[in-house]
Length: 293
Image 1: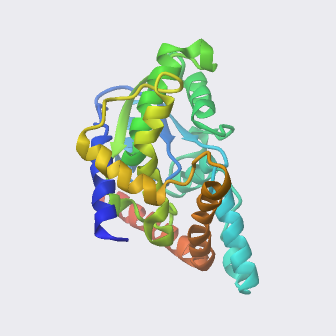
Image 2: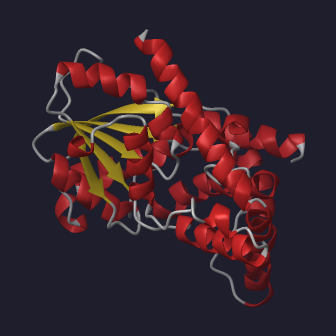
Image 3: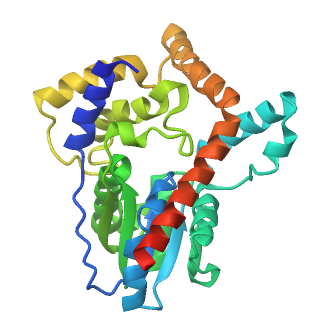
């Protein structure tokens, strides 16, 4: 990945950063992991355990339906099969994003009795419907990685707290714990952000400014007017990496062609996904032991 693209993505990453506002002395009823990235589980374990001591009745909510994760799993299974590595495929589970978060949380010793699975949502609105129904009338701490935190906050405020009836949501009383990361720190195999040399992550950062422009007042609130620096970074990334574009003709073909290097990369790195996920969880387990002793 060229340095100019990483720098542009970092400009957007910092511009749309959300500051954590949780308090370890507060009583939270729900610990909500809202992310398609197990980093949100791995990096929040200490906070969860501290809050669990304050309120043993606190529940751990794993959010997320199938999403693009299902496509990636299909590609990896096909890869392992045609390359005669079915033994590795045995470790590749068919699961929703929420089920994956739950599996990792259980491995890190979160009790299954404490876990609520909210994995019917196919988009942000449906995820918010589930979360707000579960946590209605209670206090929730929402955990998210930095790259998705602003989308969650602005969507939750608009759909749950300003227009709940319109979106089938209920009022959501929440604080946020944001896992702060540089762009480079997001590029892992276990979250697919490193696929095709980081193209998956670049698409996300290429989509943020546009998302707030297009959906402002419809599904979320635009948090601010982008600065000239942010607009310049957005233009560079949007032209190169943005995939989800409603085009026709040659532009539509170009959009679909952008998937090819990503799927090709996932195909050839199925084992790396498994290895990287296992190592990330082992590192989290080691950190948990160090914190305990």
